[in-house]
Amino acid sequence: MSNYYSSLYDPVWVASPEEPVDWLDLAQRVGQLEGAAVVRLQPLDADGVFICGMEVGLQACGYSVDRFFCFGNWYLPVEAGGFETYWRQRPAQLRNTVERARRRLDRSHSWHIDILTDLSPALELGIAAYQRVYAQSWKAPEPNPDFMPRLIRMAASQGNLRLGLLWLEGEVVAAQVWIVTSAKAHIFKLAYQSGFDRFSVGSVLTAALMQHVMDVDGVREVDYLTGDDSYKKDWMSHRRERVGLIAFDRSRLRGCMAWARHSAGKLYRRCLSPDAIRKSLSS
Image (cartoon, rainbow, N blue to C red; front, side, top):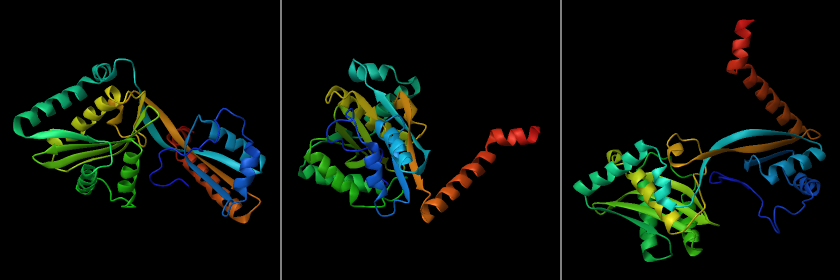
């Protein structure tokens, strides 16, 4: 049930995650699903209730269970004082980059930023602009071209959308899709047109959206979701890891074969680790 667009996989709790869950019963039900000789769940919160409970339940059902790294997740707990306090705490290089870029845009070009939040004719123009920017950026093509327009419309219908567009000489050159839910801002997609690097249009737009979600929406956390891109540590303050859970039913042929391949792969990677190579050379 997770896919290319999933940044976190977790149950939709019927009551609350604090209430007792029969993890054995849940694991047994998962084990009855088609293809359940191998169960793979990702990406998960490494410290979450769900991954720990599923490990216990699947092991009780006879599965061999292992975790694996998916990606780093950069995030920011928002302190009192809003954007002004946040911006003072950013690295000087980032602040200077954004401020110089704004001055450069002011001197040389007509530009402005729109942040769209609601269903409207302007939103449809914004979606088309976002798609143009994305197609002209460094990003790989979307595996499902219809997904983002539909997600944007759905988020707008629920009041959760923050679609940021930076206009330069009447053309959108940077676009970002943020989703705000439960006092948390999720930075879902971002792109800028190739050829506008010297104006730092992506950074200027990110700063504007940060100010909006902190000072207008009053969010308590901003989450960069997926990936360890180096620039994220300038904007965020904390990092956590998202992991996967894989389980093998060794009583079934497919599960046993998959477990053998997985175990052999882990052993091979361990033998090629820098520590293992140093020990081998020293001996």
